[in-house]
Length: 156
Image (cartoon, rainbow, N blue to C red; front, top):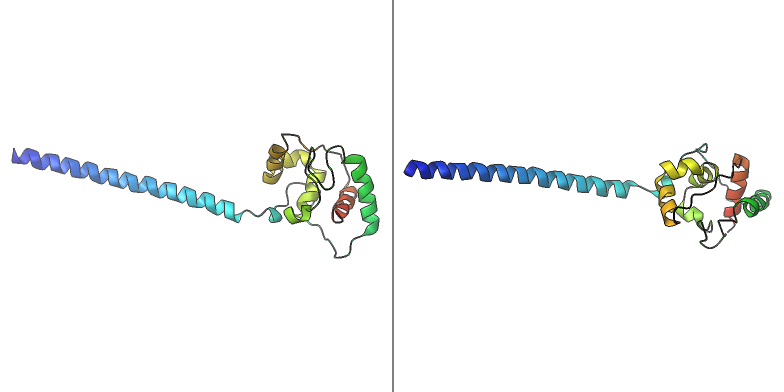
């Protein structure tokens, strides 16, 4: 009878040990996953995101180029105002203040390559959902036209 009790105690100790060991492993994995997820969120900076497209660098000078602004406004008025109002949300976001929210390279790539951006870029996907799934139309602009629009945005 004494031997039977010792065997049962041993069995329970082994079971308890295994449970504690498994619990510690599971808790540790969950903790690691949470910290990895939190770490990813804190690492992401939208101002560092350049998106996907032909542009890898944009040099903005302190002085605004008025010729580019004029050309950019003309292009914007002709190609963009069906969905964008300069200073308020419409079908798409307002470009006013865009440089506080986005990298100039990202802006150019969104103008030039909206099809790929909404498939592959985190910010573009978020905007697509925020604006009821209305994708930005690809206007097939040249890099020079997109740069002129970018300069116009600097004046808003």
